[in-house]
Amino acid sequence: MSRTLELIFVNATGGKVTLRVADPKETLTEVEVKTAMEQIVAKDIFSSTGGSLVGIAGARIVSRDVSEINLI
Image (cartoon, rainbow, N blue to C red):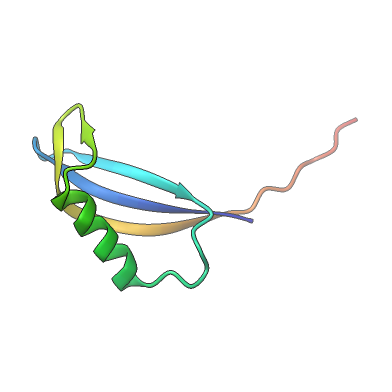
């Protein structure tokens, strides 16, 4: 099963921007995620087509389980 951390921000025009991090550590806490997101916004690290990231909209961990089907 693969896991992805999705960090969802609001940009200067009010649009949402999602940054994805593959394979986040199992022990990741809400406080760690929020702190990292606040630092990204405060330091203006990323920009989008709608301008700088200006706020936090949310975060989630997405799990995906893929099973191959052998057809040959």
